[in-house]
Image 1 (cartoon, each protein chain N blue to C red):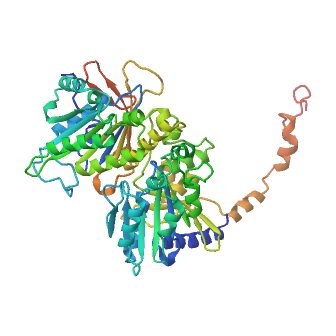
Image 2: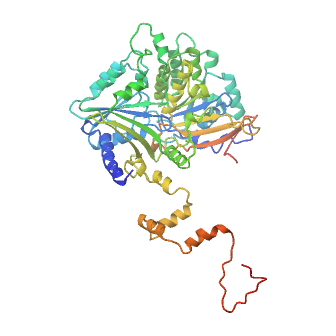
Image 3: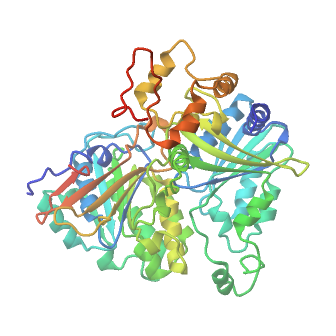
Amino acid sequence: MSDRALQHRRVHNLLLIQKLLSSRDASSPFTLVLDSVEQSAGPLVRHYIHHAKASKMDVVFVSYESLKPPADVTALIKARGKDPSAVRKEIERCVSSSRRTLLILDSLYPLTTHPSLPLSSFLSSLPSPTTSLLAIYHTDVPLPSPSLSSSTLTNTTTTGSIYTPSPLTLLRYLATTVLTTHSFSQMLARKRAKEKSRPDPLFGTDEGKEGVLVGVGANDKRGCVVEMEHRRKSGRGVEEWFFLPEVNGSGAVVLLEDQELYRRSDDREGRSDGVEARVELATFELGLTAKQRRDREGVVLPYFDAQKEEGGGGGRILYDMGVEDDFDEEEDEI
Amino acid sequence: MPSQPLIPPLLSPNLSAHPCTSLTLLTSTLGATTNWLVLRFVCATLKSKGYGTGHDCHITQGDPFDQRIVLVSWLRDGAWWRESGRKLGIDFQRVHLIDALSNGLGMGAGGLADVKKAIMKAIGSKKTPTGGGNVILMLDGLDFLLAATGWEVLGMLDMIGELREHVYSTIIATAADMPLSQSPTTPLEISHTAFVMSLAHQARSILSVRGLDTGVAKDVSGVLRISKGAEESRDEGDVEERECLYYVGSDGGVKVFERGA
């Protein structure tokens, strides 16, 4: 990709993620976060809350599984074990129409497994012009198979039938932005493997080892990698990978390929650390510019022709007799 | 008393100092049980002299020495726990042990409500009228009920969530064999996987034991992997991620060591 296109992407997509994180201009009424035990949505949610606080928004946190809500939450709704309609009433009570609100659902599992809840109409009733919804879906928690739920529900609702799309498909369809979280150190490991044409390293349950749930490098505290898929109002999709450092740490959100550690592994790989350090210390440029390289290639080396023509014939001594040389017939047969 | 130190030095930071409301998940496989680990948690908790971090909890008042344990086990009976505890010099008088195996807790008509009532009663009885102490809840083999009764996963998770609100911190030991946690197909496997993975999402740290990848060895019982769970946040101190080997001796002593050590 050319530098200009990259620059363009950098500017536009960074603005876009900032806009999404601060829920400005109703940019994304329903954001779906797909997380896993390898990288939880925690750091991302903290970013959202941090930005919401900065722009003086209310944050309503609906807790299905968290015992302790993240800091800086305006209102906490304990939804565990409650019926969705009761939860909706509580949400309506907490969300005022005059203030902009960020509504966070910490797990969609209870809603997706609910036997008679029409998921799409429930979720689409939550966002409003002033409220944006952020819902977390754990990709590694499997849902009961639909054929089973339809056999247990004899008097039937349409949900759970084997013909309806799976909840994840439905959620992906409804969402205006889909954010998938990945562990930073695992992304680095994948990239290094790819550069050396090695097979992708596998983590967690993919490792195929009995008894392993979580991979090495899960929930890296340096930050998390977020894969964004945003749908504009026009319907055009924007895809991008970002690196989000911890909220209170130093550093801002950057494109993944601009992340220093991530970028470094490609052009510095293969050199020892010592060499790398010396290169950085030098006050002059050791590399070549494109012009210098072209010029160097154009230089014709001396005896180039001689090497080409005579080199193939094996060892031969080429000697010009001088005046003082005495030609000896027996020895000097050329 | 076994010859090894009661609490392996490599493990000690992971066994105590749990922040308030934290969940620790222990997972086992058929060839590697977590019993020794549960016993170490009991031992470390009884010995510990503080709250760890996170003093903002609603039940942190009271005597800091007052850490008590409610241990509910569905896979081993009371006699077994007492006997193993005695070998390690653990005083089970201070542990409120619910022998769910012999009682068939949760298997009767009352179902989950029975389980909740029994555990809540145990938690209540351990709180002293003068402000209460820290109750550490340990659930061993709760997943057995999932298979035995076919309850909804969500109901079990809701119950765990509710119990966690009443105690200082929680430790749950469950199975995570290949079919029960990776690419499940049958309804039982699916619900078990959903159960284990949901807990993993709520946990602060996950300690998984498994057999040695290369087969059986004379001086190694298995591999222990300590991972950071999803629920960990910055202000609570760090869970150090590591993978090490362990050996459980015939006298109940445990040695935990790095690979190649």
